[in-house]
Image (cartoon, rainbow, N blue to C red; front, top):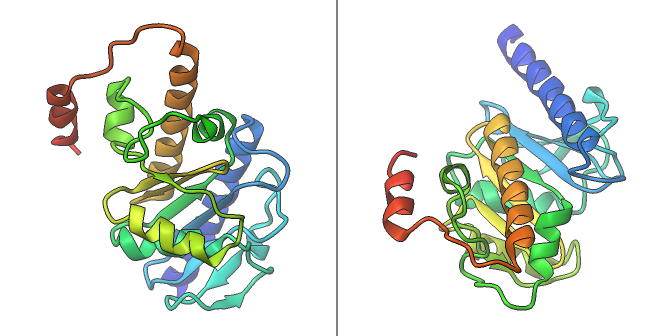
Length: 214
């Protein structure tokens, strides 16, 4: 029992720490964005509704059973299903980060993108940490149809970009999900900065070689 309590306490504190870091660096604003992480027994901790990631209370995080039922803590965000969809499709994932980060959202609004893989392979770390970024068509926040769309795209990718909304990224650990989300945001920024110029992305061979290392 002590080990379980210790694990949960540590994970609650880590969610608070990551949330504050993302907020302080303007990767999320107001009460936007949400974070979740899974315990070893399958239960899930998640940031609650109307909570700023910059001032989370570890004791008030929403807790879900392994079956996805809210069992404790504050009222969960209406976007909880985004996290549950990612866990269902990405079985090895231990955490999910969803942000409304500026550059990723900007890219999601562009009229001409490849919906199967929105961002080009500009850097090695983007390829290794994100790899592929399919675009999920627009649905209003909380729309149940969004769950179906996310689940379909997440079959082949641990990161998706919601049109006119923001990224949802899964990782084996919370830090992995955080770092992948940050790499996605920086690559989106690079992509927008470079739009007036001719670019030289990594080749298909270079990308494949990097993906083989993951």
